[in-house]
Length: 595
Image 1 (cartoon, rainbow, N blue to C red):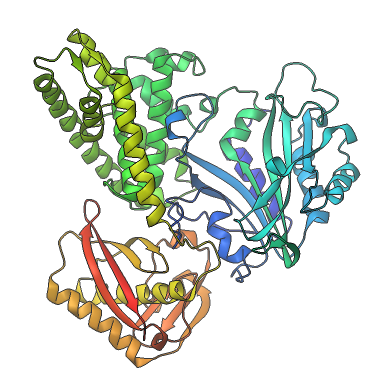
Image 2 (cartoon, rainbow, N blue to C red):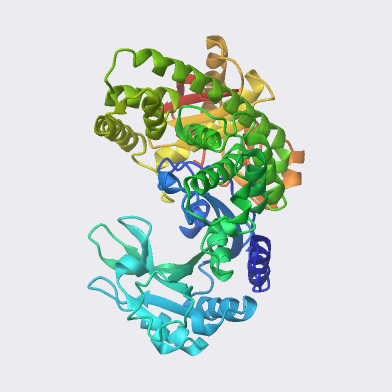
């Protein structure tokens, strides 16, 4: 059987729906109040509060396909396997069922729903160590379902243990593998588990322990299941493909690249490993990812998610030049991505005008920057016998010139580039960035919200209401980030807010705090919430039933939490800074001082 991303996604959701799981929509890719990550990077990431004990409006059994972005391997994109945006299929039990149900269902989905041959399947379980026992329970359940004993491997914690962090919920997991070799699979998985032809296709995580600060494990009062199956990667494996770019997820995108470029033979051999194929894959991945980020109303900028977005668009444009595309690269490729993904993520259609206009503006601006950079290069090399590392890095940082582009331009002038000097400057810049990030992301929200974070979250609601009242009804949340020390709020607005308006916003929030009203929520359908005047951002991430938090007449907003109990607990609200963080987007940073 030939699998497509659509058929696998559909089979997955239908399977879990038949087992009383509520199918929830994907959250957006921007984390709510988690300064430890720029994007949601797993299916469980948006569900951390519920895995930590907060009740989910739709119950204790959930399933979905979550949009995920991982940027740690962005420089590796271009090979056959790496993606920055991917979909993660997942199902969850929030203190409901556990291993006795999940393992037989996993076996059933693989062997009956997907009809995968048992002869090509294997599983791993936790082998145990001095901190936690060997997971004989999981191994026995796999054996009972029909998994051959020799295809069950006991592996160490590095392979089969999940933890939220240094402390907190943790537990063993059980991973499922598919043999991709052309010959028959080895009889023993324990002896061959490191063979790369065994490819992981699914992971069941059993959250059953709590780890305290001394490293002692105790049983959790409520045990959870968290699973994940990468959609594109699994489709590639099931079809016997050696590249995710052979799947239907990229078919129309690659057609557009072949049409636009001087590389029409791309479609004849999508898996060849040539410089042109490498460039085509980068374009396909990066513009597909850009569409997803733009779909959450993020604009290209020089900070945070906007910086990652800008970097990917510009990298795609540079590689388009290598394929002979000197204008209008982004729009046809982005439209192909929208057409493919919008049936499952309707916000891409809703925001299509924004997505395409932002891409067009960024591509146009970057092409002008490249032209300026080339002129600067020509001026600065006059009289030089070599392009030094500092100049090469300046061209990279200021104009987006990758090292290979500078080398190419230098060779045309008969010059060499000090590549070691470039690398030193690049590494020094990375070290400085890491230092800044370490301070910026300290104290992140990971499901155990501090009291200060709850108060700042509550203040954000009040400030949002004040912005709509004093700046305009057009104000729309574009992002938020909360640490124990401050809140950061991004919203749609073109101009700098006048000082007197800032004072009115502060006064509104502080008046609400002085009123000391109770904060409570009601669960209701989305449309009912909107009809009663509730503010709602990123509604696609909540599902049909939402929580509406009300603070007297000061604020009524759709949100998942967490919040203070009364406004009087917050202290004094003060806006510390406002700035631009992208085209048409303003950013406010504010604090609360003790009452």
